[in-house]
Structures are given as structure tokens and as C-alpha cells.
Amino acid sequence: MSSHEPEPDDDDTGPLPVERTREQDRQPRDRRFDQPLSVDPRPVHQDRRPVVLIAVAAVAVVGLGAIAWLFWPSADDSDASAADTTTPDSTEIAEADSASPQEAEGRLMSLLPRGYSAAACEGVVPPKGALAQVSCSENTDPGGPLTATYTLAGDNESLLAMFDGVVGALSVVNCPGNIQSPGPWRRNATPDEEAGTLVCGFQQSKPTVAWSTEANLMVSEVQSGPQGPNMVQLYTWWASHS
Image (cartoon, rainbow, N blue to C red):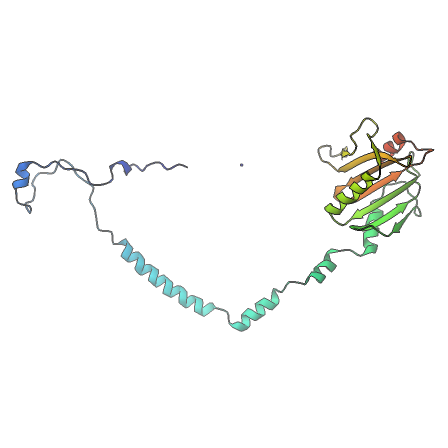
């Protein structure tokens, strides 16, 4: 994205039996043996460590108590620390994190595809969940749309909701080249990364191509007219301008 093995002495832990002869049983209990026994058990020493550890722990507790008393902050210090770490209220956070409508619209304008004149696009009242929206007239590049709407969403959830709204208003067809619609689209520079979702369709007989760009939280919808450009031309324009 262990298993315990017995210690070398685990198997022989504990008292070991010693065969006693009747002759040995008749001998006085306090007699010392001159010859070694046939089994030599490991010596057992009285463990004095618990007493020592308890004494050391008691000293440590007393010492820590004295240190804590010396360095314990006073009530005044605590109040000062609390005042220093006060977080801003929700209004201040919202003001710091959100751009003004003018700033959002300026950012959206900087993301528009090439081919628009300076006067071709203007800001309109954005829908719910959007920070800004602009409406554009004809794009003068070959195969360019006659009208377009570009929207800057406030978050990913709003981006998905607005794109679903665009898809719901279309008579959806596969994109030229039998490309899945709606379906993911990728840039040639990063073919392994999905840039957003693409859909092709018709709205009142007008060829329409729409796509989302997740990195910019942007929804784009472009249309031509019954007299052209046709769907293939509009899709070809999108392929070089997305």
C-alpha cells in the first residue's frame, strides 16, 4: 500500500524437575551437596527494579509539578493569547476569498477564445451559482460561431449544474467524427488528462457546441445559424479554440 517468534529461552522457561533418590530424601535438608546436581536451573534473583522504578517515578512527578508551576501562564497571559489567535468572522473570510463582480468579469474576458473584436462581448447578469457571464456576437475566425455565451462558475458543483442545464436544452447528437456527446474532451498537450465535458446538438435548428473547462470553472456555449457555419465547421473551430 508480524508475527511473534518465540525467544530462544521461551521453550525452557519455568522450574525443571530434578529426580531425587531415596537416599537423598533421607539426608538432612540443610546438608550441602559436594557434587553438582544433574540439572543446573537458571538462577533466580529477587527483582528489586519495581521498587527502584516507583521511587524514580515519584521523584519525576514531583519535579514535573515544580516545573509546571513555574511555567504555568497566568490568567492575563491566557487572555492575551486568546486575543492574539482570534480568527476572522465569516464576513471577513468571504470578503477575502471572493472577487468583486468587475474582477470576475475581467477574468472571464481574459479566458475567451481568440477571434472576438473588442466590442463583440459584453457582461450580462450571471445566473445563480455563477460569478460572471458574458454574451458575444460573431467570432470572425473561420467557422466561428455567430453567437456565444461564456460563464464563470463559483465552484465545481455550480459548474456541473450549469453544464447539465445546457445539455438539457439541446437535441443532443454525436460530435463530428462520431465523437461521444456528451463526453470528456482532452487537450493535445495533455492527452491523459480530461479537461472537461463536450456536447454537440441543435437548439431550434441552430448547430451548437458546448463544453466545460474544469481548470477555469468555465462553461462555454457557441452557436451558428441555419445558414451556417454547419456543425462540422463549428466543431472544427472549437477544436482549435478550446
